[in-house]
Image (cartoon, rainbow, N blue to C red; front, side, top):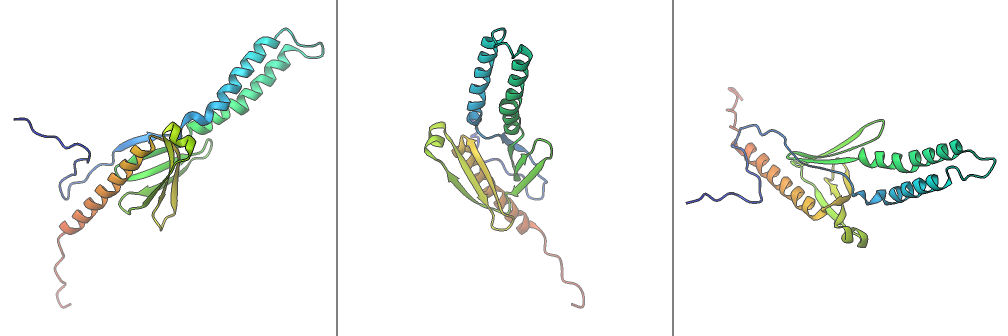
Length: 185
């Protein structure tokens, strides 16, 4: 006879046993925001290839190459680095948002505290199967995960993690022995 395996919910540790924090997923916003940068890169490459050696008299090729390099740096490479530096990490204990090119900013929201999850999807987001998740706990503020790919799967994962963490916190609180009363009290 075969043993059935649990599908869906993660296994919970025994009471009192420390459970290490594990990363479930690390993700970024959908890469479609880089569409215009990619089109611009193709256009700049085509223009440089066409105009090199064909510029009017007062202009030289080095001017064309430096202008193309500046456009690519500011309008292609910089947006890509900004997109690359903004990540969302979901672990078994918290949700972490990290952003910043030069100075890092990190925001966290714990699953144990619980939070309300609001999902918003516009027409283009539905077409790309993305969406925006807003996590609000009412105390620390809110965390907004914008243009998340596979947003419904991420939403279900967050709901499961909140539920599991609250069950574990409640179970561990119930299993703690009650200290005896102090003498003379």
